[in-house]
Image (cartoon, rainbow, N blue to C red; front, side, top):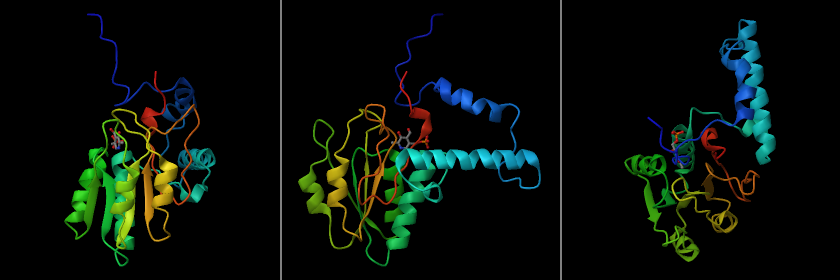
Amino acid sequence: MKPPIYLDNNATTRIDPAVLSAMMPYLTEEFGNAASSSHVYGWKAAEAVETGRSQVARLIGGAPREIVLTSGATESNNLALKGAARSYREKGRHLVSSATEHKAVLDTLKSLEAEGFESTVLPVDKEGLLDLDRLRGAIRPDTILVSIMAANNEIGVLQPMEEIGRLAGRPDVAHRPQGLWTERGGRPLRPAAGTQDTDRAPHRRRRT
Ligand SMILES: Cc1ncc(COP(=O)(O)O)c(C=O)c1O
């Protein structure tokens, strides 16, 4: 049977040949566990992880110690949202996000509500864009976090992250763009001013 044309690249996509070739040594000969510090296989794997961390930092204009590698976007969302909310809880308990965020974000907000946080989930217009006036109106004195995806994983709409960063840019509001689909014109989108954390999933780095 002739397979259908694959049109689900937003869900996941074919690995970039350059990524495959960079990874091949670690999938074949250099397969050590980076946490195994008592032998050379582990040392080599740890060295490769640190090289990757530095490369990602350079790509987005950060420092290697700021890059936290996780198993995927669901874990990143949980780590970032719960980490920020819990560490700012003495300042306030209000979180802001949008209705078109991934379930991994919306479910994390629900679980934070069960811990006593309150969230405002803003609607989007028919183009999938957030209304910046509504966002401005939603930010309250007790708002500690604004979490908006830079580019939507279903429809690809790009939110105005610079403006959102400025609106959320009060020093006491953590701004958290989610960046799965943030490449514009082949360039990675760097976190906007005021951004405290951003996450990316590598398996959608490239459309084929
Ligand atoms: C925007 C967004 N966030 C989170 C996820 C969950 O990603 P993962 O499967 O890496 O946990 C996805 C994947 O579908 C996504 O598109």
